[in-house]
Image 1 (cartoon, rainbow, N blue to C red):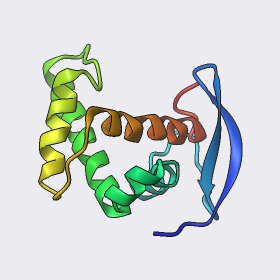
Image 2 (image 1 turned 90 degrees about the vertical axis):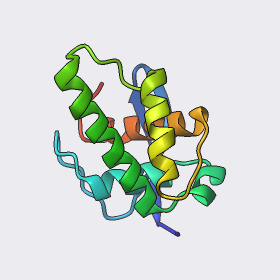
Image 3 (image 1 turned 90 degrees about the horizontal axis):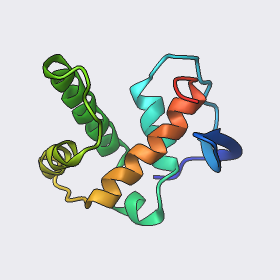
Image 4 (image 1 turned 30 degrees about the vertical axis):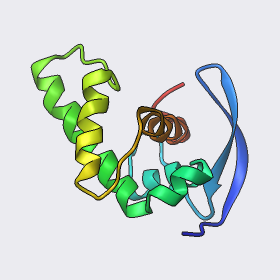
Length: 124
C-alpha cells in the first residue's frame, strides 16, 4: 500500500525521531482513532514489516492489544504492557490473521504507535 506522507521531527521520551505522517491527517489531542493510528504506525514501519502486514492487519493487531489491556487491567491494575505474556498473546492472535511475527517485529509495531500517541498528546 502506498501512502503519501510528510516527515516531521518529534520527540518521544527524550529521543528525537523523524516520523512519517500520512498526508491530510489531522491529529486531535487525546482522541485515539484506530484507522488514523494504523496509518501512522504502518507508514513508520521498516520495509520488511510493510511487506509482512497490511494496513487492515495492523488494525487487527491494535484491536487485539486493546482487548488484552482492557481484560488484564480488570485483573491487575498494575499491568506491565508488552511483557513476555503480552508478547506471547499477540504472537498467538497474529497467527489468526495468517501471519507470524517475532518479538522484535511486535515491539516495532508498538514503538511506531508511540509516535502516534505523541502526535495526539497522550505521551511526552
